[in-house]
Amino acid sequence: MTNKQELSKEQREALLHALRDRFEKNMHRHKGLEWDNVQAKLANNTEKLWSLNEMERTGGEPDVVIYDKKKNEFIFYDCSKESPKGRRSVCYDREALESRKKHKPENNAFDMATDMGIEILTEEQYRALQQLEDFDLKTSSWVQTPSDIRELGGALFCDYRFGHVFVYHNGASSYYGARGFRGSLSV
Image 1 (spheres, rainbow, N blue to C red):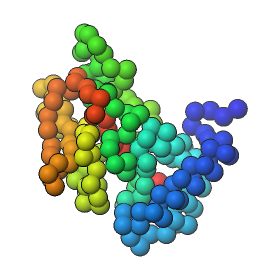
Image 2 (spheres, rainbow, N blue to C red):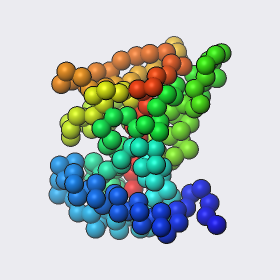
Image 3 (tube, one colour):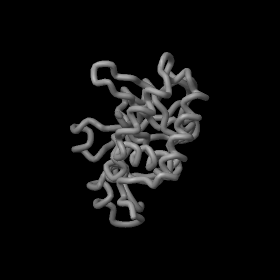
């Protein structure tokens, strides 16, 4: 029996196959990188594989978008065309969830990300992702929010419309069927 942080051999093989296929079909996201180097890093990181599987399971379609030479890390972002389906209709964080009196969503973005072992994208990361191709043309994604905004009850989200990244604000306790979150994972 496996614990929550460990994939079966079949799950591992299926995930690596999906990641390799996506990597090879989207070379514009990671020019100059080779899959064999990514796979070698993944082979020694069962916890990170579990997190990548969670990204995949919830519809994120993770792919390598950055190689950090200093840290010798490959950084995966959710690259699904729209905000991941399995992570929508969530408010921003636990405080926002607990503040709702009626019609609470099932979860919140920060707890989900923590449970998955990933980080919610920052505004800067979101903008960098949009430089690779167009994402969130019909949906939006929560992004990490500065503490001064969050302390006042707000939270930030982004989308891509009219050829531009837009950053908006909303009450952190709000949630919508078309708003989720994108994550990152360093391996």
